[in-house]
Image 1 (cartoon, rainbow, N blue to C red):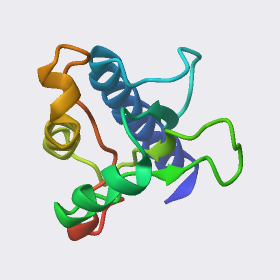
Image 2 (cartoon, rainbow, N blue to C red):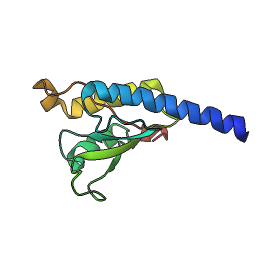
Image 3 (cartoon, helix red, strand yellow):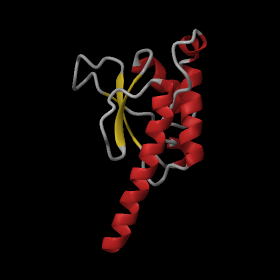
Image 4 (cartoon, rainbow, N blue to C red):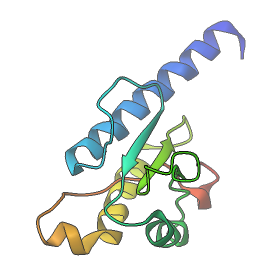
Length: 124
């Protein structure tokens, strides 16, 4: 890959991470507004243990629940976007997350949701 290849890969990951954050920020799920590389924290509308399984069934490895490391972060997950995620994957994750959390979204609490990875396509 070389020095230039590694730099290009990092730029791709940064760009895709920023796109994903923008989609999730629109939905109100982004926990921290601080700058990040390609990982960030989302606050889900419910327990990760109920929201993540339907996402996995849809082919998305949606994130790491943080309550095991930070007990006060009961609804937060850490997500990662890489070069393997296409714009379609990111948009689809956002749509499916919104559907999974649809009850609250329909009540006007939030917009569309997001997800980081397509497990069925080998890209987390």
